[in-house]
Image (cartoon, rainbow, N blue to C red; front, side):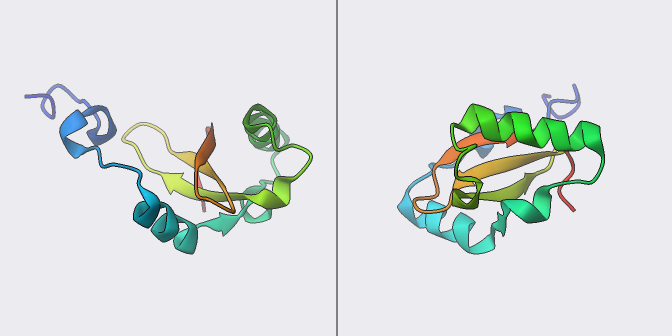
Length: 96
């Protein structure tokens, strides 16, 4: 019924998975360096820079990796710590 109501998969707890060490390693293996995410469009670039600032790593952006987060209405980028794979932020833009 939730699917018929338009609820995205990410909003359904039955689809959630634990974020344990093996999942973090797998995510880091697939993640991209942050520089690959930086768009040329000033508005989108500003959104990424704001997400980096919120992550607390604006002084060390090389310690960030990104992955796409796909949704029905808009896509986002997930920011990961490059060393341990912890999720440290989100940026509201399409990952190429």
